[in-house]
Image 1 (tube, chains in turn yellow, red):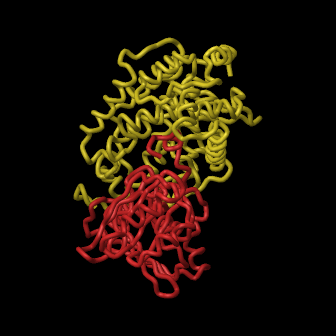
Image 2 (cartoon, helix red, strand yellow):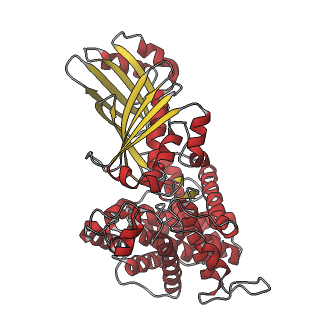
Image 3 (cartoon, chains in turn brown, cyan):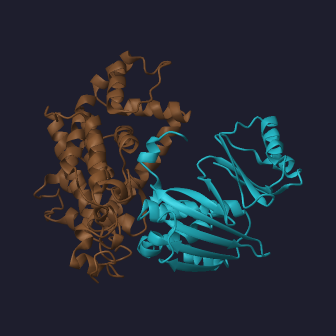
Length: 321
Length: 222
């Protein structure tokens, strides 16, 4: 935790009594609470959870520790022991990405994307492998997008040496953005396409990275807005209706987008459209997506001749078999 | 539970691959298990629409069979639920009905039978993100989600049952969040469903049972 944040917290009086509610229903309300209390997004989200759930900080942190524990296992397991999915469509991709370009000395991951992003991509794909093999994961916000947040937070933690408490801050920050997307739009692919799943995960993660790297709440919202904007319109088109292809590589792009948008925001780049309006835009784009592109497994990748062939029972919707 | 928690966003902790087709299926079957509250000798599952079409690839069958054995969404035993059901001597049967249309695409009927021949059927819907609702008990339309502590009272559709139940609850200081009544026909069988934010202590269920119009009580604690 940065010194700036620690001081801000002392002055904010957040540790003492506060009769003011920490609940919020929009990005602008959340931003207002951050400003009034000199608090990070994660702190406001923690207080909100304690207030609305009538629970102690310790109880929230115990549950977050359990989430992190599951995430840790899921990002690492397939690197040591790759498993095929139920259908056999995926399995072993995380290991390949992680080990590609590894030097003989076993140091680092010399690759196109650099060490941090390569590791994050490998981790995100690992979670989708665990998920597809009926392993234990944390939906974040959904099972199909469950690799993005742990992929980024845990890889950066290893590289930057972040504490468990700091990792929890990352989850709380991401949780705040995800809650707003869930409340004011949707995170269901069946309702609004992959932009609502991987797009949401990417926005949550971009915001979390910014806070963990020492950025301001304002920068967090910028990163989230940029991330939503970049993946706006992304369709949900799972081959054979399974959470495997293209979901796994979409998680990789969700991570890459989160890294990119966090870096833009931390550099002071802004998106002219405010976060709340981007949430609304995502919802409206989702509504205008045809049914074929909303998890029905009839369009996009799933609707191609190859996609239909890979679907065991053939494709009922497009007339091909 | 009437707010979106950070753990609704970063969660549920679940066995993959799908929150609706796997975690939701576990939750429906787990509620069926809790409602039945007795040993299970035999179970029949009928899966409809999307559950029937893509259920196999999502492990929906393992999830259902795990749920009726009392496993939660994050229980790794779900993967082995067939073997564990065999070991427990539970007879199971799956019907994959992809022809019949249902109100919700992710629908399952679960028929449970105990060794002494007691039968209960429920219909559940998986509505997204692992969230579910039960929409039928023994062919009577109902609606509840299991998010709250839920008291389900099967009774004769005659005057006095609601007054009796609310009286008992009020004496024990239980605050009712929601209360709904369902029945098959006038004077037939009714279900009174009471949901509360707090735990409903089971020691006063005996008092509710004192009323002769009350046939059966089921309780789901959060």
